[in-house]
Image (tube, rainbow, N blue to C red; front, side):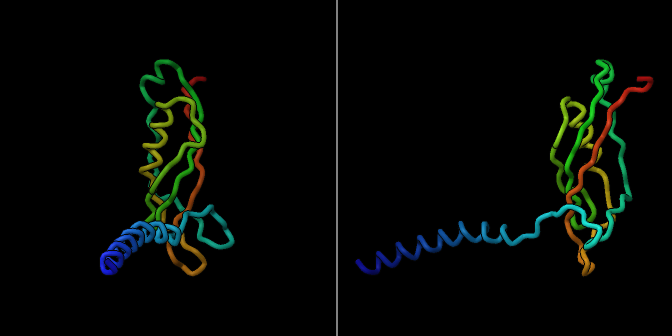
Length: 130
């Protein structure tokens, strides 16, 4: 009976360790930070893609502003975007598609190590002649 209890306990401990370890690991990963000119290199855009005005939005004469938070990955690519403001889904999608293709020189901390950075970008969709 004792051996069975030990086996059961050992199985639970192994299962719990498997569940806890990834969460503990995630807590130790570096999180992206906002730009601080005192402690990091300035983000330098090296490839920019302009958003394409969605045809349906043009025809309906929809204009607006889309504000995104974007994460520059350690390699300079855009790793993620999140919408802070955007009322027309078509404009939001166009902005996210464009910003997702931007490339930056990797941002570096004081020690020269590449790091992730969060920045805010505003895209204005305005029709010509308005």
